[in-house]
Image 1 (cartoon, rainbow, N blue to C red):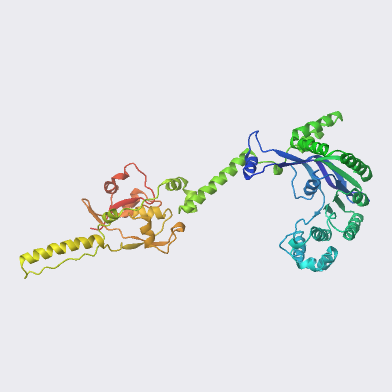
Image 2 (cartoon, helix red, strand yellow):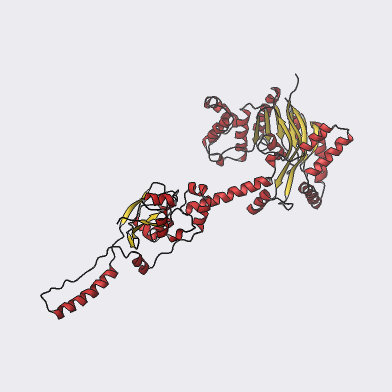
Length: 516
């Protein structure tokens, strides 16, 4: 039976940022110059081919890149550069991978099975089989957060092997289980192997590798130190471990620091130069060299943002802040988007300060007030009448200044640019007075067509006749206002000399001809 290529990795790399704070992370995202947050290369140009029916072991010391490689193969983590071709569905098994701590074991079985595309009927049919294989027992209906690491591993392994995947990635999932479950899992893996499925087995135990694997990848501080037949590679790995264990603690620490420093100072330019030199020595064609260049160029998905994307992201952040401030100030989102210049001018305008009591009295001089007047009888003496009149006059003056009737109101329909501040200014009252007239109205969320109470504007008499106030609305023009109220444009400008050379603004107060 001819074996099919299932996984091909070409010069895979993975770069991680060493940012420690949120500020450092933002610098890493928006960095446009040479100074950037330090990085760490977990993978440095990994290449291999794996065929159907093969079981590949991935071994190495802690921090060598085993889990990073398995996560890239399973699609959890994107590579920084390089190409990865996979033919088939991949399922990963790691200690508790993808399990929801707040759900029970049974609920996790259903959730993960649904995520794999199975129907509820299919899940119900094999639910008991999964539970039995996991050996969880009565704890299957308890939250996963109460499970031990071994129980979590058993449950995750049992769910994954019952999904019938094409490619199975096992990341140290059997390392925490007991020997009984390990043998059961090993038997299940061997049955997958007989079916022609591909298995990646991540572990640190060479003995386990020899039992099941065909080939082994020896990962060493981000590099594939060796890839080949299991016995040959495992013998090399065991010899390295023996030599390493003979070192003193100081020498071990020094060795680790040297290897990690290489990972910090690594670069794609270094990898590209190395591979191009190798291709020239082998007499490779230009097509092969171009393939190397493409494989050693950062993928867009794994790279930092480009400069245009950085500016676009910054614009979105500023625009969001602009809309938020506009909303808080009582400006509708529609107005903020359609008329940004007017909105910004409104945001910059200071909030009108409350008028002092005497100013309120002056502004509201036409408002009716309750007064007390004394009536004098014509039949009484002149002296008595004069004294009574003087006394009444004093009482009347005192009463007039101390008792003021509430402002008369009229209905007003909210237009597009209206806010609490503009309406209060247009009707010559404070924002507090306008809110007092409308105790149930939320002025932060005014909407077009809303009915509110405003002061009743009294007619004023000028040399040109009776006039009244008019609030400019969106779309108004001078000629339209003059025509609407039976005036000429010259008469409108004569009543409003401040209009000379000034454009109309929504919310502006004009004097117009009133009824005689």
